[in-house]
Length: 168
Image (tube, rainbow, N blue to C red; front, side, top):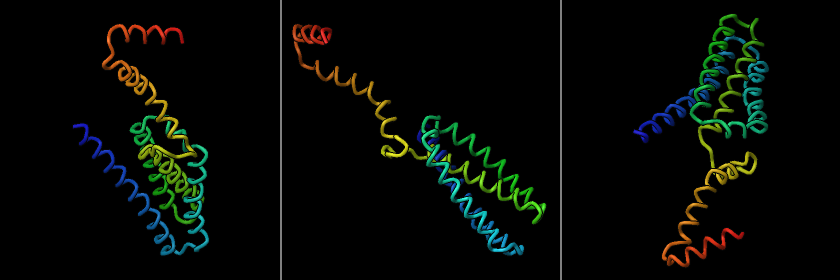
């Protein structure tokens, strides 16, 4: 059951990522078809790509401290709210361009923040994921080391080993 849950979780995040990228492409096409100047359409696309990079660089490690599933759930809800805002601003026409810009940047920023929770690589010197993993694994490694060091020792040797550990 756990494997099925993980499969569904990652399948959902894949669909979400594809949907976000398709949205960006469609937004550009619809804005140009609607008669929006290329500069304004490009400004939305450019800021929707640039600002999330800055956010992930500065606050990407914050996503590592949060539970992944909860982070994805909350950010998906925020992204859905931003999508609803995009729809409303689009319906108001060219007069709501700046609202459209704000909602597009908000949506892409939220999805970018979420990306760290979807896939946490073990090594990333910028966000310190390797250190986080080390902190989680250290107690287990210490228990294993203690257990392994006492395999095959006689009772007297185990007692002597414990005495030496007590002195340190």
